[in-house]
Length: 309
Image 1 (tube, rainbow, N blue to C red):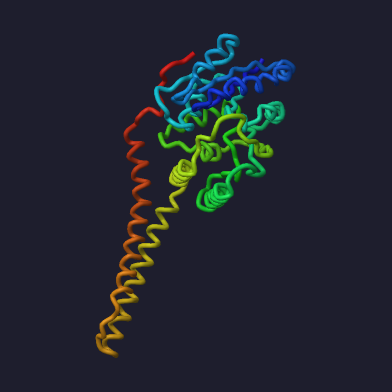
Image 2 (cartoon, rainbow, N blue to C red):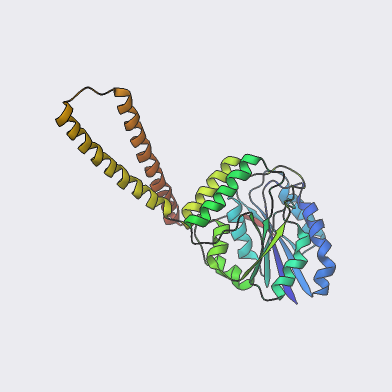
């Protein structure tokens, strides 16, 4: 019999934990038919509510439910990595506990895995229920990543993905502190089948991903899988050097022909402000890469476990 390991990162998902278990176990008949055993690994990412307590209740009635609880909130990326570390299955699947990743897709995903695919990934065909501004910037992010990165990142891709043991082990080989799982999935390669589904709103509770958090997450993704921003900063520096040289030549020629009339200071202030802004922007780009390098050099653990059941 094969073993399916389901990794479920949780942060303040007390209300959704039992509902997810209920939906997941609706596939029990299919699992028995396919002779597949399963384990459910809830990774409590430092929740401040009763998430861990709810998982313990499930464990008492079903020993196939496991709990991995962090000492504090380390982020979803760390939770995914920790779950992959603990998973023992021949198949490993990553799912959200808010039921936006429907467990009803598991039979179809397993059928594709049996056909020889290394992973089955999911993507939303629409963003129904999301604020228009958030959807717009999300689409722009994926479009930008496809242009500046060699790593394939599909628009609307979810972390909901089933993979073979071999692919899971390959992901674990990437031990960087600053993790961007969507990019890592594409970087390791392997043959992937994409499943499309309609966007599903959360079962209960509110999303933990604010616009600001998503913006920071997108910056992590760009700096993790592309050095194009550094090249952009260098090109901007060259362009402004050339522009400055041209302006010097222009001023010299104008002075020789027309004398040295006093120019208006507002235009001068605007030019200085523009150039200063570009310099600070480019310095910020370099700073982002330097900060990532700084965190990697520290060699801090990706997560710390407080409790494991």
